[in-house]
Length: 341
Image (cartoon, rainbow, N blue to C red; front, side, top):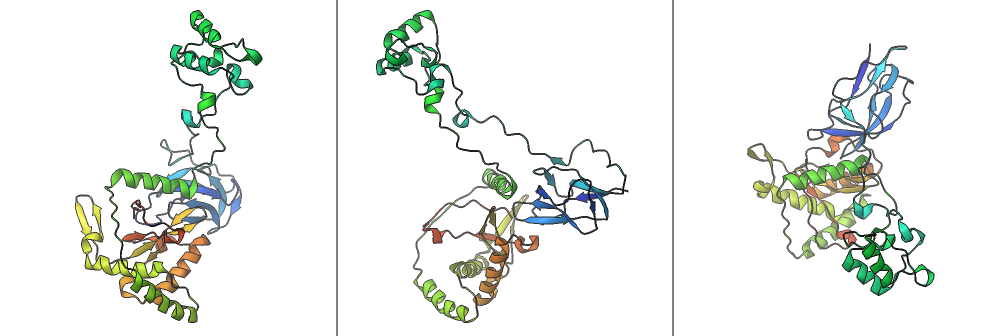
């Protein structure tokens, strides 16, 4: 009997995942608990194991997206046929990209433009614009085939090459260097950020403060941290300070659920960490009430694990606010996009 492979619930707010890689070929034999595919969400990439021993049937192609509990495939008995597909598919394969907008479409060669830069006198160009003549459709009688004003007037009288007086696409549109598919974690992050901007009222405020005491505190902690084999970053101190501020001002430590504003009793700080394919946000829990050196050790371990691609979903769940620090890149201030929980 076929056993379904379904997308697991990877966290309270994760609703969709993308098949980034099948680890076992379609139709190959697998053992129970053997990893059979990699699934990417906007937060992480996880391996999905086989729920039983048997023959793998892949129901979703690489790049296909599924909802939580959506069908990814089956484990079949030898010789068993996969179940008939449901009327409404659980996953959608990545659609072919829509036609690029004119700005990004490679200009199609036409008329004389196909042989290189269109040759026309300045007067001819001005007259063509006035008369609505497409110069790529005009034959030039000047030296080397150059289009003259007389050629433009002749074309206008003959009704040839008339257009809406726009400059030839071959001269105005940039050439495409390459196209990079927006898939995997980056694609899902882009989708979530667009959703965030469309559904929340976002506001950015900035203020300069004297960071002297913060710098002095870090310098003292760096010495202690070095002795214990850990690095103490500004992110750790900012996370602890932010958590304390949120507990003091609970209206800022809140989420909107339906018709209610829910004030949260705990301040768990998500710290943005850049990884090869995007950005992940591991969480420092109860940061206000824990020693700085403990937080420093945990953040170092979480960041290292993130860069190795081994973060677990529960290590990124439960954050009540996200801290993103671009100071190392000489950025003074920027308007962040709210990171949905």
